[in-house]
Image (tube, rainbow, N blue to C red):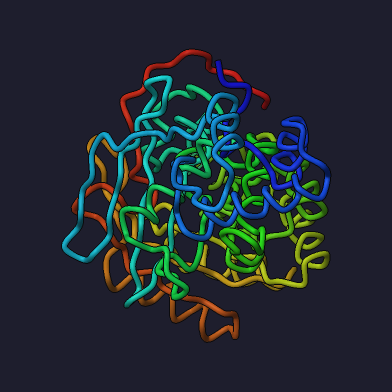
Length: 357
Ligand code: SF4
C-alpha cells in the first residue's frame, strides 16, 4: 500500500519522505533534487528509469510512493489546433483539459473541480453539479500528461502559460490549487513563473483577498456584466458577493501583486452587449488597474443564450477601446470540439453537491 502520491508532494515534502528511508539530510536533499528533475524537467515518471539512483533506494521509493498517472479517456483535436483531453481520474471521475496553441507555443487550461457549484447561466460546466474538488496530484497530472502528449520536455517549452479556467471554481479548492501552483513554480522542475499562471474566479471575494497574499499569480475575474442587476441574472454568485465588494478585492489584489486584473466578459446577445453596458463597464474599469478580454459566446447544446452579432461585438469593442482602456477581443478557439471557454462538461455523476463553499 502506497503511503503517498508523488504528484501531491511539494519539494520539501519529498525530501522529508526520503529522509525517512534512512538517508542523511544531505543525501535526502540530493536525491530529492535528482528525482524532482527526472519527473518535472525530463518527464520521467517511472522510478525504474531514475538511472543515477541506487537500486535499493529505487525499490524503497517504488513501494512507498505512487507514480501512477490518470489516464486519457478521449482526445479531440480541433481544426484550429486546439486539443481537448478527457482524463479519467483513478476514482472514475472525468475531467477536461484544453491546450490552446498560439503559433509554436500555447496555453494549457486546467480544471480544478469535477463540475462546478456556481451555475453561471451561460456556462456548460455550470450545468454539471459539483462532484468533487480535485486533489493537487490530479491538477499536476493534467499538466504532465499534456506535456507528454505534446512532447514538451525540451528547454523550448510549448506550454508557456497555465490558466485555471477549466472546469470548476479554483478558489473553492483553495488549498489544492495553491499547492499545485507551488509545484508548478518550482525552478528545479516545471518552472512556470507566477506571471505565467492565471487563476480565474467568478468572484469569491474572501478568497481573492487570501490569494493576493498566498497565491500571487495573475488573476482573471469572470465579470460578464457591469451592474449587479444584470450580473445576478447570469451569475448567481453575485447575490452573495456584489460588484462593489468584488471590485474592492480586485483593487487590493492588483496593489499587492503589481499586476492588472484580467476581466473576462462573454458577449451575450441583448443581455450584456448594449451601449448602456459598455458605458457602465468603462466606469467600472476606471476603479482599478485592469484589462478587458471580450469573448465571443460559444454555443453549447441547450444553452439559452445567443452570441452577439459581429456588428455588436465590434461596436462594444470600439467603445471600450476609445475610452482608453486596454481591451482585447479573444477569438474563440476549439469551438468544433466543445473545448472553448464555458463549454467544458463531463458525465461524472454527483457524489456530494456541497463542498467547502
Ligand atoms: S463560468 Fe466558471 S464559475 Fe461559472 S459555472 Fe462555469 S466553471 Fe463554474
